Structure formats: structure tokens, C-alpha cells
Amino acid sequence: MKIFLDTANLSEIKNALDDGLISGLTTNPTLVAKEGKDYQETVDSILNITNIPTSIEVVSDNFEQMVEESIKYAALSPQVVIKIPCSRDGLKLVRVLSKKEIKTNVTLVYTANQAFLSGIAGATYISPFINRLKQISTDGINNIEKISSVFAKHSVDTKILAASIRDSYQVTEAFLAGADIVTLPYSIYTELLSHPLTETGITTFREDYEKVVGVEG
Ligand code: G3P
Image (cartoon, rainbow, N blue to C red; front, side):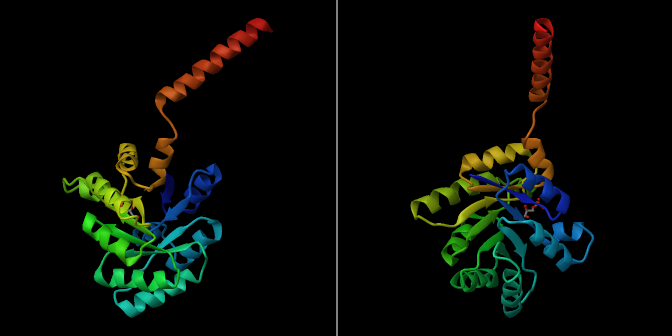
């Protein structure tokens, strides 16, 4: 069971790495663009500070360029995982990269069947999206249950990386359904770390301790 961070923000990455609870990083072109800097410069800065598997997404729209772009990213660091949209060319690319032992993450997975094909292609990770399905009144958690059960039955090594998480309960649900990894925006990651009753409990315990110490002293 692992948690990845879903961001391209350097401060968020540094803070989370410092906690030692994050085992990987996922990015996408939208997250990189949100940083408002040069695309390649942002990717390079991220790779400079991470020593954990880091998914960088290919954006080319023809197969040959996708291969070229993937090989360029993979050469940047041994931690690079090539994030590939689930499409016919995308899965062809997974096969090519898996023969070269380059790690892959098939993204924008919305059905169990897309996940099965990605597993057959040899993907290292598949990213089934949860919240984007919820927004169209569809249960993405149910997909994870199906994928997890079929992968276990057929001993598929591909890891289930639940993505598009927008609230902390979706984290619990994804793990319960059999996700190996959940990738989280920084806000949800920090939300997981705390609860208002934990905060008030810490304050009360400290106050009570100080009363006793005060009495003894
Ligand atoms: O990076 C993939 C995914 O987690 C992004 O999904 O719905 O949060 O934009 P979303």
C-alpha cells in the first residue's frame, strides 16, 4: 500500500518528501501548466528534487513522436515513469517501452476493460480515474474492485494507481477496493494527516500533562 503525490508544485513536493510518507509522484500537462513556467524547465526541476518514481506524461499525437518523446524523458532519470494516455497508440507504446524496461503508467483509464488491455500490454501502473467518473454519476470505485479481482486471479503484475481523487473518503474507498497506490493532490494529502478531534485531543492531553507537572513541581 503506497501513496503518491499528484502535483507539479516544487514546494508541495519538497514538503511531502520531507515527511517520508510519499513513495512516488505523478504529474500531467495540466498540473505542469498550472506552475506557469516553461514546460521542460518544470519537468527538469521536479526530477532534480525527486528520488522516487515520477510519472511524466507524453503529449505527442503520433506514434513515432510518442516513442521519441518517451525515450527523451526516460533518459532524464532512472526514476522517470512514462505516463501514457489509454489509446491504441498508447498501448502500442507501452509494449515498445516495456521491452526496453522503461516503466509506464497508463492514464485516463475509465473502464475495467481498458485496465485489462493495459495489463496485457505490460504497463507498470494503470491509473483508473475516480472523481472525473463521479462527476458524470459513475462509480469509479467499482472499476477498481473489478480490476483488482481480475489482476489477482490472473497474477497480473501491473499496479493499480487510483487517480483523480478529490476527497479523503475516496482514498479509503480506493484502498478498500484493492488499489495498490493512491495518488493525491497536496491538499488531500495534508487532510489525511489530521482530524479536528485529534487536534483538540493533543491540546487537552498537553494541558492535562502540564497541570500534573505543575502540581508535582
Ligand atoms: O494526474 C491524474 C489525475 O489524478 C488528475 O485528475 O481529476 O484530479 O484532474 P483530476
